[in-house]
Image (cartoon, rainbow over all chains, first blue to last red; front, side, top):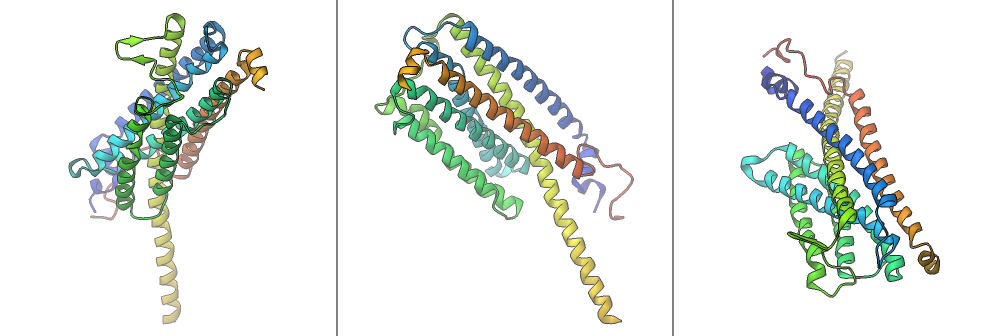
Length: 264
Length: 59
């Protein structure tokens, strides 16, 4: 085995070790700016912006609920692209599989929050915590699909086999994302249609700025979460490899001792 | 409960929503950091590059 054939040493030789450190700094900066943005969003959303003419104070929930849904879509989109790139033979790399898994996990967190905050908004607005509305149902399905995807990732197997089946599952699960988005247009829905569309917005003044800030802040938080989960996945992969190597060494040592015992 | 929500302008639901969202994100973020730090401590060379002292297996 040459020096460069060992993964850790190859990193040192090619100078790639610098890239993760730089990436970690950028991710930390995103996390910090995102955190400040979230604090500002909470301050503006709860204390500064006025109550809505129709929804009253309930409108304040809409400064976080749509951003959570957007971040879930963003996370699943990144997971989809990374999975597609992994399945493409020219770009096949286990790091893409880790990106896909890390992003999907963040997406599940954001989807869960979307469902809960939506339910908290729906109870006083519609009079029910939950209804089998197309948007709500397809969002719940999305949550379950990606929970299944995360469970599939934990099944044992060779890293390449696991990555391949996970990538296929991510592509299948992503089919539900456009269905969720367009469900309010395709079917009769209790849920309102899109309030903000390219070139047209029905939100004004401080409410619009707070909503925009919320989208940016939580997206930066997502970037930090993705980077942190990706680093953790890398460490987990190394831990798995080293654990296997240790187990093999122990087994070989045991076999050597038993042979020595038989010989004596 | 519906009457209370109308009387208070739904502020209880709003606060509940903010608490759920922020608490969930904070707990998830903390769990990520804690798990990464624990693994970094366990893996001796995590976050560092291996010294280039020579081939590992004498090749």
